[in-house]
Length: 117
Length: 345
Image (cartoon, rainbow over all chains, first blue to last red; front, side, top):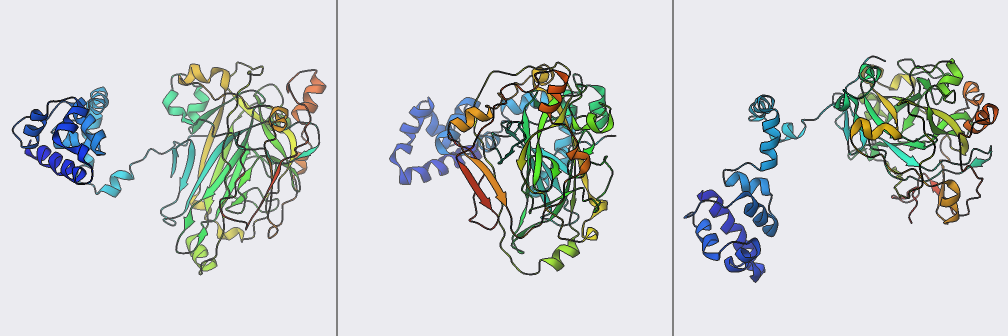
C-alpha cells in the first residue's frame, strides 16, 4: 500500500514543481476524489483507490495505468477478463515468463503457421 | 520466422543475421484501365487488413486451414500491389538483401512457371530487395506488368486458370530468402548510402462492384503499366536457400469477409477516372543502375480481364474508362530520402 502512495506522491510532486495545478487539491478535484482522501492515500493511511480512479490518476500524471495498478496490488479488469477466459493457459504462460529477461518477453510473438500447399 | 504485425508480414531470420528482416505489405490501389495502353504506377490507398486463417478456423474452407498462412479481403476486380521493405543495417549503411518469390495461384508472377521451392536464374523467378521496392502485377514483357486484379476463382480469368486450366489454388504465395551472412559482410564491408521508397495511403469510397459469393479469389492480369523487375546482380549462390520462409496469402471475396471474420472490409477503391480527374498523382519509378528482366512468354500470352470478358460477353470490369494522367511523380532511386508514391486528397 505504501509503495503506491509513495510513488504517487513522488510523481505528483515532480509534476507540481513545474505546474501548480498538480497540488493535492487540484489533482483530487480532476480525478473526482476528496483532497483529504488522496492525501491519506499518498501517506499510506488509506487503501489505494478504485481501478477507475487509478486510471484517471495515471492519465493526469502521464503514467502507465498498468504500472500504477500493479503498485496498488491490482490487475486491470481487461487483463482479468483475458485470464478468466483461458485461466490454465495464461497461468502456465505467466509462470514460464516470470524469470525471462524483458527482451525475451518482448520477443514473444505469434508466428504465421505454414501448412501443406 | 514469419509474423503478422500491423497488417504486414514480417520475415525475420535472426539465425542468419540480427538485421535480416523484410516486411511485405499488401497495398490497396485503384484499378488502372485495361485498355492496352501503358500506364504509370497507381498510388497506395492503404493496407489490406490481414488476419491469420487459424483465427477463423470455423468459417474458412478446410483447404485454407491445410495451407495455413493468412487471409485478406478483395472485391471482384479490385487491384493490389506489394510493398517490400528490408531492414536498414546501421553498421553497414545498407538494407539487408533478400530474394523474394511471388506467385498467384502458384504461378510465378515473374517467370510464369509453376511454383517450385528455391530460386532459379534462367529465367529468373524472383525479385531482389531493397532494389525492387514494389510489385504491381504479372511481368508480361521487359519493363511492363499487367496489374494484379482479383477475380473469383473458377470464373476463368485468373492467371492460374489460364495457364493450368484448373482453379485449384488461388491466392498469393510468397517465399523470402535472405542473403548469406558471410556474403553480405563480404559484399558490404563499408558504409554505402541507399534509400527506401514508400507509398502511403488515401481513402475514398464508391459503390461495390458486382461480386461472386465464392470465398476464393485469384489474381488475374489487368491493365498494363510500366514497371521494371530487376535482374539479380548477385550470384545465385549468395542466397541462403535453406533458410527461406514462405507464406500462403488467401484472398477472400470481400462480400463474405464480414461473415467469416466479423469485421468489415475496406471500401472499394475509386475508379482511375475519378482519381485522375481529381488531379491526384500517378507514379513512375526507375533505377538507372539496374537492368530489367525480360518478360515471360507464358505471362505475355495471358489474356487480360477486359480481353477475356469481351470474349465471354461478361461485364467483368465496370468503369474501365481510359485516363490520361496529368500529375506524374517521378521516383528515381538515389534521390532524396523520403520520396514517396502516394496520393493525398
